[in-house]
Amino acid sequence: MALPVGFYGSLQWIGWLSLLDEVALNHWNTQRKAKNISLEKLSELTGISKRHIINIEKGDANASLELVVIIMKQLDISLDNIVFSSILDEDQKLYKEIIIRLMKFPVSDREIIIEMLDVILEKNKLLHQHKTSI
Image (cartoon, rainbow, N blue to C red):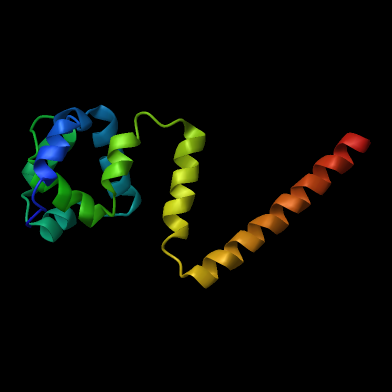
């Protein structure tokens, strides 16, 4: 997998190796399991040996940037999810996840989803007003 020129340098500049800390690896492992992707399947999809993937997940081996990108692509994890996962608070993570999921829909569907959210928010507001008036 060829990465754009300058890609390696820019990631080194932000301290790529420090990104593969326990939080990032736990996120990677959690995503793999949540998507029901076995180690065997991930190995098959990426061409990376199962043993090496296990060692990376356990923190016993370092992964090259290229391997990390290949695995992240197969797990549908964006680089910013890894970079920012340890510094975002829970609300920010939720907002980011909502945006990521919304962007998978066509614009017309996003507008419908936003309208549905508006209905839910209005209903919640009315319910809260009713509870406080009692």
